[in-house]
Every structure is written in structure tokens, then in C-alpha cells.
Amino acid sequence: MPAADPIAAIATAPGRGGIGVVRLSGGTLEGFILPLTGRHLEPRHATHTRFLDATGATLDEGIALYFPAPHSYTGEAVLELQGHGGPQVLQGVLERCLELGARLAEPGEFSRRAFLNGKLDLVQAEAVADLIDAGSREAARCALRSLDGEFSRRIYVVKDALINLRMLVEASLDFPEEDVDFLKQADAWGKLAGITTQLDAVLAQARQGALLREGMNVVLIGQPNVGKSSLLNRLAGYDAAIVTAIAGTTRDTVREAVQIHGVPLHIIDTAGLRETEDPVEKLGIARTWSAVAKADVAVLLIDTQHGVGVEETAMLRRLGEIPVLTVHNKIDLSGQAPQVSPSGMELWISAETGEGIDLLEVRLLQLAGWQTGAESAFIARARHVAALRRARGHLRDAAATSAQLEFLAEELRLAQEALSEITGEFRADDLIGVIFSQFCIGK
Image (tube, rainbow, N blue to C red; front, side):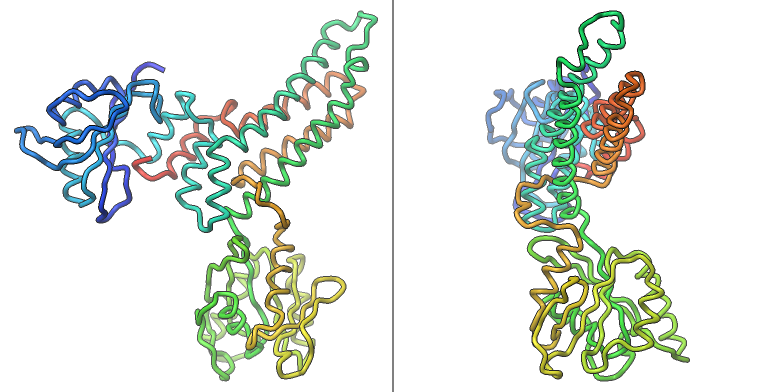
């Protein structure tokens, strides 16, 4: 790309810190280095220097690093000024950069330029933001794999095989009079099956990565005093919700983010469901059903000593197609042992003592789709999973129309386009804008 206009931004988090970084990118930066530092900088060497204002007075002192194009994060000339992390100090250095002709960078513009200059593909660029936002060590490790290119490499392997198969199909279309059957000789149908198997493996890992990034919404429902708040506190590891013996203590939804083996779960404790004339409690019950509608899994808590009654049966009917895990609580009072039913959709636990909580955690992960040994997963977003599913659908249609080569060729083309959307080779400008606008300014 031609040299873009210089941009500048504070690249470290807002607030005070020991070190703060102001980053510039674009152009040649020759008009910035000497006025800012009073000296010439050796490329790719850390230089201790003063940062100067328009009069030559010192704004700050620290380390200056100059990276000539294309050997930088953005692929452009980049200057990083690493000084003290005081907000006023950093703002003064940034304002000096703007005085010298830079403009303030837009959110994600540094990473966007890296993408447009071929330094990162779209998956890697998104992984930068995902690494910053990672809510667990597992999510951070998976984001690093994506940033390192693991996800992209898997996509490229499948896409290259798909391109090879498209070439065979197109050759058969272009030379129908030839006696040689290109497709049979090249085992085209075997190749199609192999590509489908490869894509299924990538899709499975992408689902794991998406779960690490997005988490799962779990709503706790049941009658008053069955132990919903106690269970929330047990899963959270501290008293996130008030627990009393008074029915109707919880009148509003209480949300808590917890991690089970590194997988984020968003647990929502709700008001007890019962007939009531209390207007405040009625509002809480209405919010309960609103939370249920958005849940991935509903956990229906039942007092073991009372069992499933008319009220619980009515709740189950109203839940519809939402997966429901029925949890019989208070086994410490009934004398039962913690267990899981053969179907896996009923458990017996004690939120008070913690008995059976490990069984509940494992079952929740299974319902979320988490698989043991998923440490090799890479971080993924909803759009990645959606594109992979579209590609999988086109491969399925390709296999179904294999006798009609024109349709086969079209389905293979559409599958390739879906995969290319993931890495950004085939893209819409509005999609690129939305993705990078979610980044922080200095990235």
C-alpha cells in the first residue's frame, strides 16, 4: 500500500502506570523523530532520550524505538515512545505528535493497517482484541494460538484442498469431450469426503474456542427457598446473593460470571416462581421468565424432600425447548447420596454442603458442548462458526449434487468464499469496519 497519513495514539490502558506508550504509524516519520527526540534514531534499537515540546523543553524521558517500513507491526514506519505512565505526561506527548502533523488514530486502526498491509490476516487481527479481553487463562492461551496463526493455518489447509478440487471439477467442465475422466482418476469424491472431514474437525475446535470467548448463559429457576441463591454462591465461591429462610428474598435477577475449568459461565439467579400479590415480586418473576428466554441452559432446582410437584411440572411445560437440567437440592437433609440420573438430565446435590457440586459442574460443561482435552482449541467468534457452518452446508450440497458438475462447481465455490470470509481474503468493507471499530484506540 502507498504510505498512509501518520496516526498517533496512547497505546497503554487509561489511568496511571509505571510505563506508558505513545505510538505513531504511517508516512516516513522523519518529520517527527528529530523534533520529538532531538536526535536521529537507529532503526530497531532502544534509545534512551528526552521527549521534547515545541520549545525544546522536556515533556518526559524514556525509550524511543523506530521501526522502518515494512518491518513493523503495521507494515508502516512506526515510532514508539515509552515513557512514564502518568495521564498528563502521556497526553502532553500525544498532543506534541498531533502538533507535528499526525492525526488521532481511530479505534483499531493500527491493527487494521497491519491487516491491510498483509502483516496479519483477519483472524489474527481479531485475536489481538480477544487476547486483551480474555477472561481466563484458557481463553488467553487459545487467543495466542489464533494470534500465532494456528486457526488461520487450519483454514488455509482446508481452502487449498478445496481449490485443488475446484480445479479438477472446472477442468472436467472445460473439456467435456476428453476421454479421460479427470474426476475419477483424481479420486475427486474421496477428496471431497476428506475435505469435509477436515472441516468438521476445524468446526469442532472453533465451537470450543467460541465457548471460551462467549461463555454460556445458565439461569437458575424454581420455587422460593429451594436453594437457588445458595447454589449461585457455591458456584461463585463467595456470597454473591443474599440467602435467608424468608420466601421471596430474591426479587430481581442476580448475575454472576464464574469459571468452571476455565470455561466462563454466566449464572443468573432469579426470583422464586410462585403466585403472589406483591407487585415488586411480580416484577422479579417477570424478569425471571425474560432471563429464561435468553438462557442456553435452565437449571430447575427442586427441594429433594418435596419432589416434583404441580408447580414444577407447569414450569417444565413453559420452558419449551430450552435444555433443562433438573437438580434435586438439599440431600444433606434427606440423607441421599449425590448422583446423576442415567439420562444425565437429573442430579442430586447439596448446595449447602457442596456435595455433588462437582457432578453439576461437569454436567454443565457437557451441556455447553465443552470436550475434555480441548486445550488445543483456538479462540473463535460467532462469525467464524457461522462461516464454517455455511461452508459445511455447501460441501454437503456438493456431495448431494455430485452428478451435476455445474452445481458441484458452484457449491465448491461458495464453500471457498465462506472460508475466505474468515481470514478476510473475501470480505465486505462494512464487515471490516465493524470488526476493527471494537478495538481500543491504541491497537
